[in-house]
Amino acid sequence: MKIDAHQHFWNYDPLKHEWIGDDMAVIRRDFLPDQLSAVLQENHIEGCVAVQADQTVEETTFLLELSDTNEFIKGVVGWVDLQSPDVADYLQQFSSHPKFKGLRHVLQGEAKRDLMLSPPFLEGISKLATYDLSYDILIFADQLQFVPEFVAMFPDTRFVIDHIAKPEIKNGNISQWKKDLEGVAQHRNVSCKISGMVTEADLKNWKPADFKPYLDVVVDAFGIDRVMYGSDWPVCLAAGSYAQVFNLVSSYFRDFSTAEQELFFGGNATHFYKLD
Image (cartoon, rainbow, N blue to C red; front, side):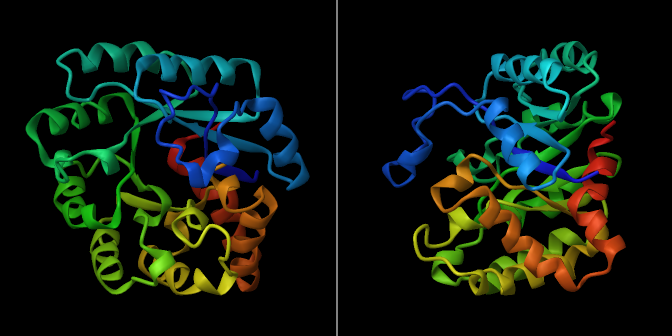
């Protein structure tokens, strides 16, 4: 089963989605399952993992309700306030839904760059293993330095780096990101989503060759058994079509064995998120 391990849905709201800048004006509209279903079918992808974009419990409910009526949504990565004393109550509530698979917090937007190491946040993360939930690490490259200490505290929790930690592909910056990502990859409880790359490149003028050095680093560091495909639809549409994003990674993995391609395009995501 081919799985898109990272995409979003929303009813567009200018205030809630103020992070969508003028350079991404094309995605200032609603994006819902009917639209994605057609795109996935065109690219022969059977299922997806819907990931939170808004930091509210209502967002988690919204995504789970969409998954109830759309079988191709195989899992949901939602949001709860991990720093709340009531976090366990929320986790218990949402874990009753079979498609609730994990959590994410928008760490990339936090002024406190090492928020992941703060005691209240760590206390929340410590509850995930009880409910067999994973955690998506959404950060910019400057925050990679904090991840080894963070994930080492929770060896029984599954973590995944979103969007290869957003290196500055547009500027060709790679050395520090490479060093830090390789340090993260030494922790076997961490995987990496090959996703969100085109929006870190030149939105209008990127070329497939721009990404090869970064893809080489990720695959060499994590190995084929800890990487997974994600489109980051609809955000990716600011830089190209779904097919362009899919073909970008398909071309890179073309020379890998059939078994390795099956792991990258679905097997690893199915195992990581425990999809049905």
